Image (tube, rainbow, N blue to C red; front, top):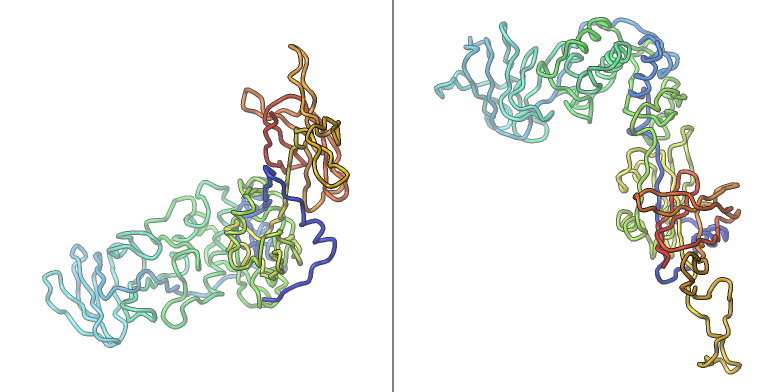
Length: 486
């Protein structure tokens, strides 16, 4: 990671005075949920609610692609790995042996390259030096135990293949036809209650992604979880999503004749991103460029905010902070504008980090984020004793250095408030032409606006408040820390 020099302006903005009792809030504002590449699922739902067809939805997110039919193909999904044994039911054939579908059979890893099939009574039915295929002519196969997708005792169309795992132990792979696979994915990736056009767009994107990507080389094609696509098998199927798969049967998206890697994710925040700005090292793809997403605002993650103390933010950033944390400065944004590069600025230098790394370290929903430092302080309400000519303090002096700001208010008569207090502080980065609201917490537990003030071009504000209680300053969507005035 590279160190970056700081400009004088940046130093001045971060080097805010720290006084006893000062309240400082680190605010992270963000948009979206997911990686930001390809189709926003909430955006697709929004398009569908506005009457768009699945063809129109796909054409919007994957520019320049064409719909066409895929050939007949199977998808190989890794279901279990690590254990030396696995059990199943529902099979009628196992490696050429006739099996009873109502009985439970066991497969055990033999050495490093083979498998043994055991009958329900423990008798060995056969040794196999090649992958062992288990099929059924009656019902979906049941794989006992917990699969990688979180399903225990799940049912699966197609065949179960048992072979030595490339990781450890025995690998159990579901070899399933393309559309049976898609039927097991769509309800795991999108709510089945959503509009048909959104479900149909998801079905085509799921089918295309499965054929265009390979997660496991010669052993399997796809994981059954978010590393690939969430696949629940036959147990996950729902009538509405099956109808969407059947309505788009065999359809995939192609770009220049090749099946497109149709990435999708939850929420865009209003704009998707160019692939190379998120998947570092990826080559630009014309069909994976950022596009506006006008109906994504129906998502609960369209906008979000995280509030932390400086200490909490520094703990999350860990070793990236050199010295004391000053803040996070975004160096480069994409078109959405998700963060491509950022600097974690400390008192002893800065560290440059990728946007995706920053997202992971801070636990953000997306790399579309901005960072604000909001401080609020109360002017001290104690008499300021002027210094003597010799540099000491004149003990019996009653003269106030700044009577307007520092005078301690007198109790005041009934019905008449005491002298006002002052709140001052700063917001970094400085907003442009910002009008701040001063709010006071009422007895009803709600915040009520009691005044307004301007924020300077450098992000500073200074405002007078009356009475006692809990006050805060609000600038646009940012609410500063609460300060109690006594």
